[in-house]
Length: 233
Image 1 (cartoon, rainbow, N blue to C red):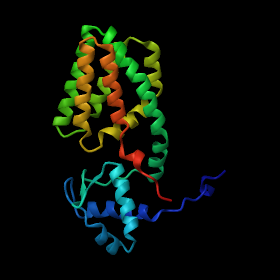
Image 2: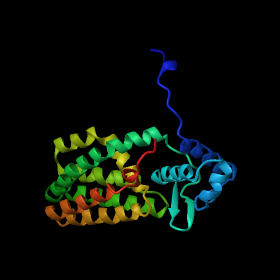
Image 3: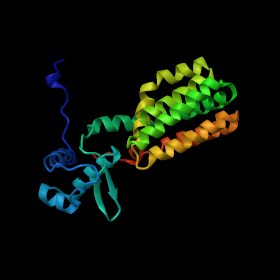
Image 4: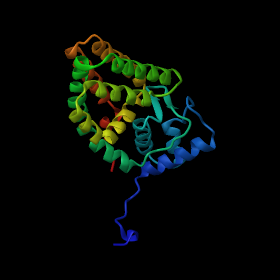
């Protein structure tokens, strides 16, 4: 069947608001830390309801592009509003709970095994991943690569080829959940602290503490704005 005759998708009004806000930020040369106009002013200038503006702002929050401060306005977190298509957000929201459930089951066991089986060289790999993540965050980043290296090093230290294979099969979804989590306000530094607790337990050779620390960490990863978002029709 011709692609030209695929089902048509009705554009939501708040998606049009998102397009206009992206254009406005670029034209006004706004940057991270700058404040957007008040919702009431945006609604008046765009000729839409305040509800449509509020829906657009929520989508921007979900994507970590703005921070809405209670009673203090809405501020840019990044220099641009490169908004992910809403349909992609909806699909990722559907996938995320299953991915997080699998991560908790797999990574808790991997941390436990790593505390039992790791070599000194593997412990050093985990420590170096922590240092890399710390440097990323200190430089203003989210610590994404350091996070990836840390969990990869823990997996290697567990010496379980089957669990490692399971992790590989969901590597793409894990990357999604990692990016989703680390763009939450204040999350990178909190994640680093939790990684340190996991490392300490593995270094001390305490499997139960390592498993508990990893479980706490993955449950923190699961606390993301996306899962609280209810897509508007």
